[in-house]
Image (cartoon, rainbow, N blue to C red; front, side, top):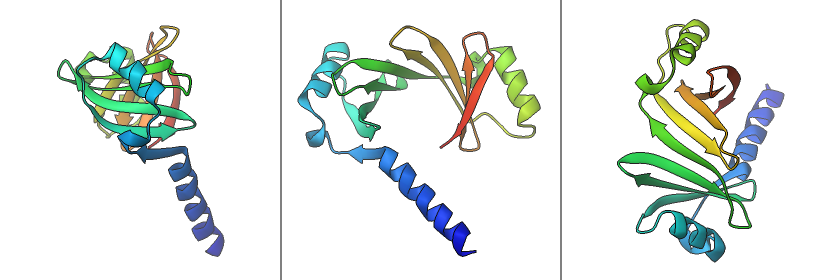
Length: 142
């Protein structure tokens, strides 16, 4: 029992260390400058520091978005919320089969710095990732 409690505590600490909310005044100027160049007049709703990178969360064109910016001020990833109905049939069929009885709560389109597109389906606090053709890549717990 003590081992279980210790492992759970360690896991929570590890999650907290990897992703931390950051006040805007603590975000480096180079990171904020990159964001402002790409999204002028857009207000950041929240900043998160994750593995040395900064993630800006914001609304743009009536969609929830986030952008991941590395320490050098380069955008490494953009995530845009999409309607669950915009996911391909391949993805929704995979989710229905492998997460039977569970509903996709949210969906997103992710584009990395090289232009590679992936899709995310959130099911019960689990992010299920797929490539552009709808092939399962991996799942990660929130």
